[in-house]
Length: 270
Image (cartoon, rainbow, N blue to C red; front, side, top):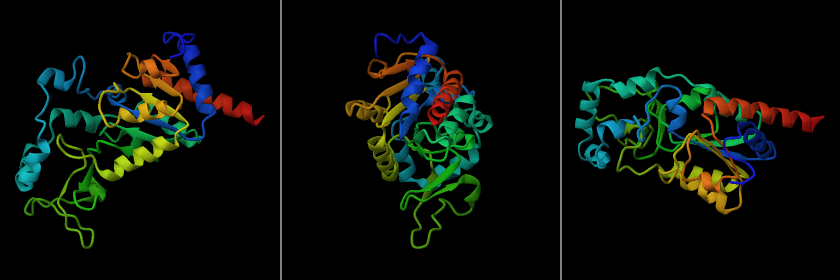
């Protein structure tokens, strides 16, 4: 980060970030669990995180599913909704989610890559989006990659596992959320790579930047000389590479950033 832009100078950081975004033609953002935390959803890592408190889940989850998908579905239906899932289902988009959607609506943000599975970006109005780790509220065919909103795909408890209804497919259907040991769908990775290659400004929001491949996209942008804006209340592995760091939660920083971008765009039209 530029030594003349200290991260604790919030107003200055927002002004510099707004200038970069207002001059961009295709900005790309990467959003992480910090945004969901502001909507009341626990994080996985860090202080108070689910895995910090309870330990990480087994790394071979998908192997268990693939070995006996019928049994996995039977257990899923029998167990119902757990505490973490319930927190996702009851969460609402916050000011940060809505601000990202607004950046897209005014033509500044070309694409959003999110690591979150909670559907809050979509519900806030985001349209151009890649959910790299899937979406809890969607289903996905493992053969053809077709996705459906959960409420549109009826699971018959007497006919498990469910199968894809796309003509000529018939593949096994699972929740869209990417399990440990499961490959991220190639179509999602391809989209992320294409959008990153198009980016002329990159924005990271509420991500610790330690989970790959997602964390690699802003790194790839920086290596091309693309300016990086980091919005995060805490330092991350990316902070040292950022053109400007906005050291604040997304719900506070992003609405202010949108207002500053709007002011610059309006000024450029007069």
